Image (cartoon, rainbow, N blue to C red; front, side):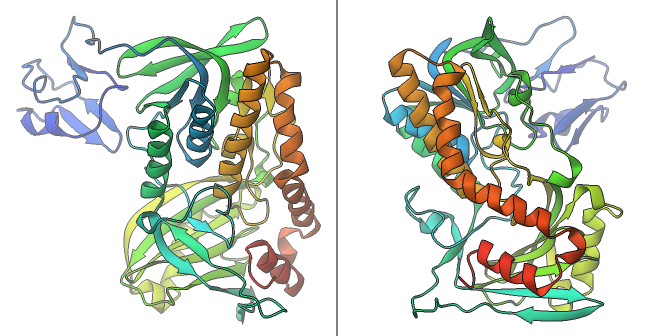
Length: 438
């Protein structure tokens, strides 16, 4: 029977089209070979990746990658790409690994950025900006009644409150990764970290699995940017396990064919629609919007997808739209693990739980963390000391900056239990956190 090299298969479906007995089935990101396969081998030359292997043969090798870098970054989301380009800019040899075959996909994000969040990180680019946001509308739902409020678009002194953005993450993430590559980092897609290399207690590299097979790649510092599902932190001995009340489980539609204000984001604080969380509507231009919700995981009684469907169907201005994309995922709303570094290893972004506990926003936080981690890593490598004590400067500087705001927001979230998050006090606090009504 034909076998599938899952690391090499790109799920293009070409092989399915030539199989005479329908023994191949493309199931989202899995190619399944049934027992009907009688090894005619017609599918082998149809596969552009060389991922199909005849019985008794082994997968063919591709050119190898280097086996040592100063820094290996695992995960090419915003946090990882910024870490890679910053490390490369400091003269380090850098490998940036992404387990998926396409950077930025699938999107697991509402794609919103508040006013000023990109300042000092990257200049806005029309290629990856879908909408400019100049106002917000927050609706508190109590006892079935909606109480909308639109925070002022100007500060008390008359100054404009600023412009936020709705991104096209598929383009945005790829642009950041391309910048890292253009700056000198080596980028490999469809390459996963499957373990860590150690010298005693010190992390000295990664075990990588890619289209070229399995390989040990050594590094002076490994930066884990592998998302909410991070395994690297656990392998390094860092406690990244989330408690249920510190996880938002989310579902989102991209709706087309709706009519909303293209410069306004909409938020619904509704205990019935999104227990412990909220519903968002983020415009993406041309009659499109991300419509999603997050539910505190320990309060889930009905699947978020079902809650989202009910919300959309109950509002005619959304129900008339068509669902062109469905995404789902989890958002950590915990404090970062302590420590978030160990000998030779650091965590950034969602892997380090660097997401705002009140809003669930983490794009800019992750980018800032990636830059800071790369700076500290470069200094540690230059000094010849990549111990936890040396890398801990990253954790200290984070805690003194953005981490302080995160800790405050975590305390505020704890002060308002889910039953009180549909009240006026929490609404005004939420408005401040999303950058509205300052």
